[in-house]
Length: 90
Image (cartoon, rainbow, N blue to C red):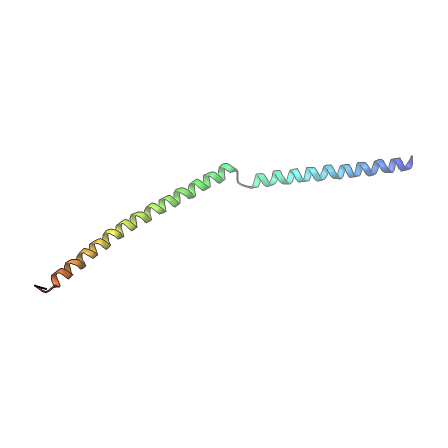
């Protein structure tokens, strides 16, 4: 009878440890989810960064277009200066 009682105490102890471990793991997962940003928050953050990137790209495209116009103007001025400096007849 004494051995049966010891066996029951051991099985009960192991079961209690197993349950406590499972509860600890579940609690840790729940805490981890609570502290990490939700999918919605991550999506909003990504959308905001995308909008900022698009705005920056639009500004860069406008700047490139302006520089292209300036380059074409400078090329026309250079061409006009070359044509004026040509010797007549040749």
